[in-house]
Length: 293
Image 1 (cartoon, one colour):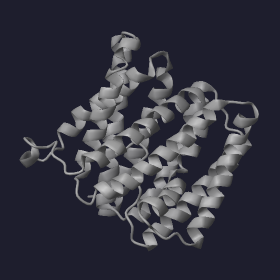
Image 2 (tube, rainbow, N blue to C red; image 1 turned 120 degrees about the vertical axis):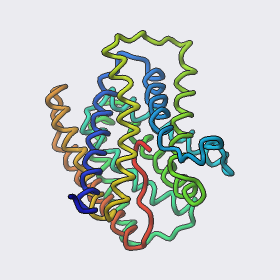
Image 3 (cartoon, rainbow, N blue to C red; image 1 turned 60 degrees about the vertical axis):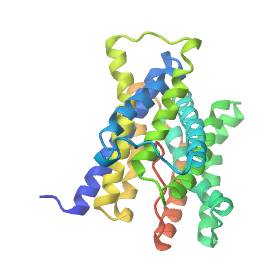
Image 4 (cartoon, rainbow, N blue to C red; image 1 turned 90 degrees about the vertical axis):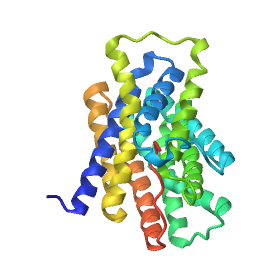
């Protein structure tokens, strides 16, 4: 029988694996319109979340007192999702994953303006280190005018606002409702792109596209279970296994070899996010949400 901490480790590991598989499928799906892929991400997420709605909320599961905050969370979440999917299709997998770890850096900055939080010297130092890491990773792209390096940065900006809005929403709203509204919003957004041309997938491709929503949904559920069973400070470092998976799969499937600058920048970004994370634990704050929440 596994202990609670062991269960927490197991769920976090499964969550990282599921997110990594989803990223692989998104990168593979570049023959399909982006809006079509977004639809599959949202629709099959809705199907999954339907089963976690409490029985007493089946009839009024959609009720909320904070519709405007839900709307802004969905808007910026959709912008972040479009950006990360675009980046995954056009940049090396390890590069995208490395920059995505920078979300806590911008969350720290946004918390000053949206939550009126005070940020101490340690977190400002972490922000500075993180920015240096992003510049090191992105410099080759900017020097060769590769505009796709902008998209992971847009993603971390969007996810940083999402983190702030979820902190605000979670004081009154259940986590499943926040995720359900987001899945519904991106499903509708994806469906609106139908007139611009979708491609009829084969049964095999249809299965893989469906897995984008499935793995994204279960990854978030496993992440929540991990935080439920174990101390956050113990399991969160496992998230950085995603970079190892990205390097391995990127090399084996697409022949991508991360540059030295990418690895050095990734180390700085990860170090900065760990500093921020440890300070939040010390201040007894909730961890920032998953990048796919």
